[in-house]
Length: 258
Image 1 (cartoon, rainbow, N blue to C red):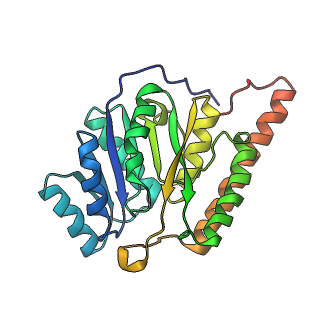
Image 2: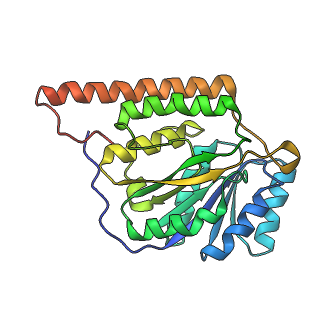
């Protein structure tokens, strides 16, 4: 496999990208809070039901966001990939992707934009600072995932691969072969960016889990998403180990395939 070129320094023109699926109580609040920070907010509606769709349509009507409706639900990764394409069509060089669930501290936006502007070739990725609202099972799951990602990329290269708060350089991600279209996408793209040799900048962001009456909703599918994660880490670890063995035999260059 060929190596992906490192992304050269480039102008920084960033939009905000919000993928959403049935977040009627939070997507409007998130988009409205984002609008003052950039010229364009792109909302990708990933096949939401009537209430979620209406919330997105209201954002477009109010001029708060460019809204793209996907005809059916394809998953978080599919929505983000669609958002990348829409951002390119509008001439943006970077996207700051933020989840629509309202869990992240939006006061961190200026800091992330500044880091992205200072290091336009880098993935700027958040790592969560939880308050007491975080369920213990979520913390344990994050530690489990971090173990595997440390194995795949090196310890501490990506401090949290699942967070939905990150700045992507579009010239970098267009070179990547990311198969995942659902929640496995976030992990895979972070690992493959690290493999490409691009810089990874880890930035803290406060996270608060919302109660159901605040719009807190999880689309995590316990069986299927855990199965996807298991398959993904099996694949990535196999690639990493095979590359390591071939490198020792002098048959591979040092950088892993993106």
